[in-house]
Length: 231
Image 1 (cartoon, rainbow, N blue to C red):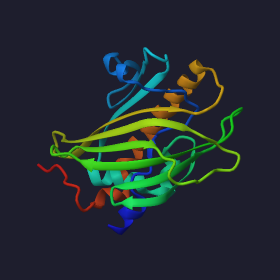
Image 2: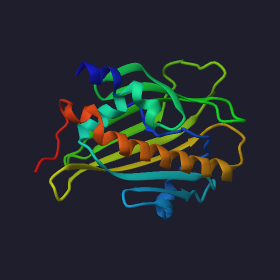
Image 3: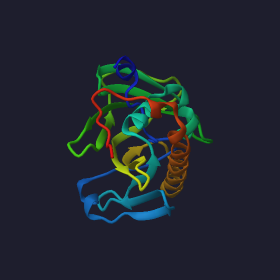
């Protein structure tokens, strides 16, 4: 469990989280609003919806990927590979280990003209449910003072991953992935442009992940305590 303890769920990731300038916020009433599809293919989709209170945007990305649960989690923990799939990410580090399933981490993003570089600092916690699905909860963290010189901190409201294991017709392991998030990049970019960039960058990140994940070396590894769906 040593590797897990050092590097669990940086993403996140996110995310995919905030790889672009974004002004998004969530409130309880958004659950009553329908999602509006922005892009959809056979295995990928990106949607958004507007808050009735503050008129900002919440984002959801879904994907169907050939992967085990452990393979997915370990893929997210591969620090060196993060910039290869997470759009505009330049660096990611675990800065505090809380437990095997809880960590505080940072993600740095390169500048997009005319904006300054961005970074976020998050608390990540994951768990497995009785139906074998895995959830990852992300929230802003201020417990560790880790400032980035000349970079603007992203205000992160919430992020949530839901990983549901399934078996295809050939009895191969697949994951139905759903990721939703809300954040504010702190910039003054017009909302419409910021939303469009966010949607494009998330779609690109999900495509990158979908291509790399099935071929990843982590598909041959397992995480103690994670139960896989078997035929």
